[in-house]
Image (cartoon, rainbow, N blue to C red; front, side, top):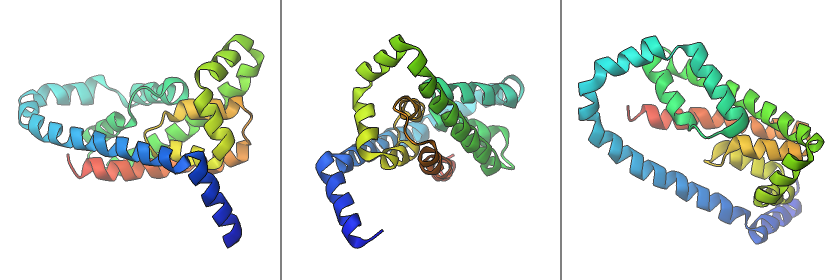
Length: 201
């Protein structure tokens, strides 16, 4: 990419509000950390009282296959359960290989995003749902149309509902190859967040 193209791309992102969007969600991420870290440090002594019960829940009741199934459904359709909770489960359940499990979660999330993309493509055959998505998620539709792969990259890395972004990418027939390429950042996101979380627990 030439310097002229980079300059035009920078001007486009600046004028269209892309940098503001990234800054807003980086601020959101920072705010979450500012709240969660002190809360965890304050609650840690009290959680120790329930350590046996938590260990029983993690090791006997939350079986890996069930946890991954719930995670896959969440990442495919809703994306309402924060992936960070699953990372904490991986750390507690597999303390000898937490990053290997994080990698498995990351790949699961990436594959679930592809499913979400496929669901978006299928919505063109369901006019009522198709119209609902365009009406109530117009901002995300516009973001992807304006910024393309850059928005997919941001959604993969920052606390933007990735499942919804993937579904809308399919809905507007965003090029699959480009989606798959930029979506790989989802895997990087898991390792970055895991490194931050595991350093605190």
